[in-house]
Image 1 (cartoon, rainbow, N blue to C red):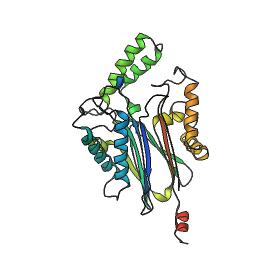
Image 2 (image 1 turned 90 degrees about the horizontal axis):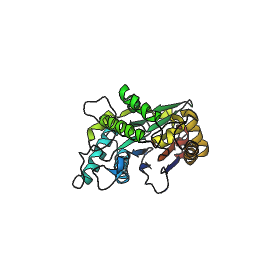
Image 3 (image 1 turned 90 degrees about the vertical axis):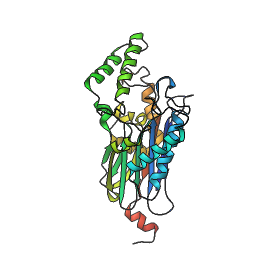
Image 4 (image 1 turned 180 degrees about the vertical axis):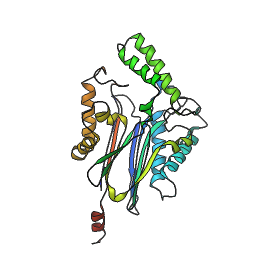
Length: 296
């Protein structure tokens, strides 16, 4: 079985707020992968003494352990329990009611001999390569479906000169408007994994027969920029690039595109450079699995 992963911070001297890992249990034919993208709070103000990298590693580790354990929980239930465990680990020292309490986007997948189960929350992505060679992106589109007034604010910010006081003021107002829609109890916004385990039931989930999936590719939005921001190819082309050249080749292509547009004018985006993480899992097929066990 082929497993490859890459994770790189957006710039030197900056902590990497992404997390990724894979577990291949010793017993049985299966495994699990997890990818998290931590949400960077403005000026580091999140009510937590630990910080976002601590949060993503705690949450990601707990989710991977639960997902790779015997399947008495769905992936959504695994995420809910992982959020609870992580919250309990710093409930006594940190303000978990803070609107910017550490949080993350989530991708998780696991497989056994019969099925592939997936979960996506917020704007990270999971690609499923099918047995016929096609690629299906699993996306949570709610962040792209913000109310018209908020999208208009974003367009207004991008129209102002970078570095100007006007842009800074408009950008702060836009950030507050987006923040008000994150994990909003009345709905209509988008969701990230923070301190409330109930958010797990709002993730995009599903299952696919194992025989119909040949590979999985998890991506934070810093890596999916290759498709979504710089439009260097489609999802199928992205997976093909990673299969042929490896996940660090994808990150390198994204860095080249970012460096070519340092002011974010040709390709508007919130950060000139972002943490970029990807994990690729090529799943053994039935014939190969039978061959390793002496089957016909």
